[in-house]
Image 1 (spheres, rainbow, N blue to C red):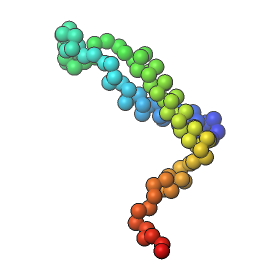
Image 2: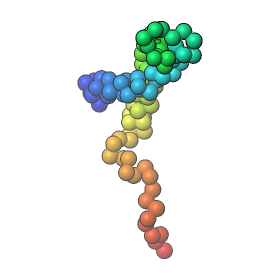
Image 3: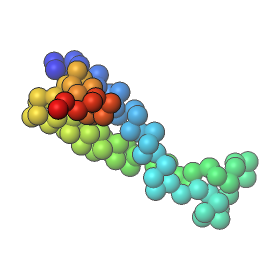
Image 4: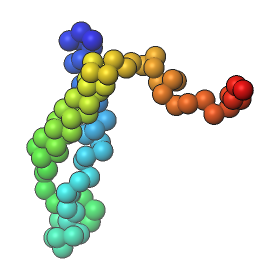
Length: 94
């Protein structure tokens, strides 16, 4: 994989992981019982994007590291996916 493909894969994975990590450790205004007038009670208490971006980057690095280990260390690729799961519909040979 060349470096352009690696950066594109990292970027796409980072955005997917961001939306998975975003709700973690978010406190709402309702939980703190301090609802600002004109906002919904489920609005976030304060900004937490820096922590979310840091967690996203760490999780993405781990996922990309696992992907790199599987593709480079084990030599598996996209074409090997159909061969990972055994075919249970085959009749045994006697």
